[in-house]
Length: 387
Image (cartoon, rainbow, N blue to C red; front, side):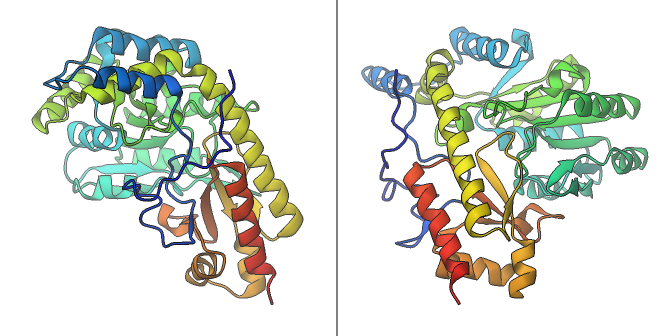
């Protein structure tokens, strides 16, 4: 079955955070949602549910739970016990609840920068102390600094917020890297909150391995249909906690805060349909995204070689290195942002938002029709080719 990712779906006027916050004429390529229509089976499942006119309090069905477990078994080789899954209305609410449940005010929590910036507020708003374990970058290849990380664990940090695959640097961690992390976690009695929301957006050179498979007793892993099937507005996620004690503590906080379940009938219908029937759509999407990623990297290398792109192992956000261009043109980060938004009319996510190691970078979401990606490339290159 063929799927159409080339047709541009008009999103302005739909209360789209991505498009309705952008000025007319601006190409918004910042927030990580896709511009593609959801899988047809998802739309059909929503229509079917709307045929029943009652939308009362809704249970999370066994069928929904089994669809998620089947998906993880098939896609990620994960055998998840039914009792280990907590249904939650979103990944970030689950992460915030896990911080509450698994740490105390004043505790140290480690993040690996540059990283998804809502992590920072999630820690600070809970009155915990951020500790930074910056990724080490060698010619745009990122790796974990295990020596410094162990020093933070030795210094008392007992919680790690982990991004896997990593947003924004597009790394898919290898088994060897994850095994070394698991060793440190066990040695220092650390718990990992692993944000695995991008785990289905993986390209052929990489293989996703969930940290759950290596250190289940110290891991809280968060999954969702939102990135995989472009259902961020649906509000359905799964938090997997194999350890009974950790799960009980998290479940208590979720219940206290009114986050203990997904009660939206439409969310549940959409998510189950995606897991049960969305695999062909996803495979077609991955092929399309690979081409978009290659187009972006090749055109920048040809037309604007001062801007380089990190290797794209996973996710649909590209991490673009503008540092050489900034040096050549005498631009600091704020000036670079102005050129991109005012001259190129392209809205990207400034790297400085992602913390240490983000200066000189921009994050670009290439999950859009190929013509839109090509237009964005033209605009960026034209803006810096002008005298």
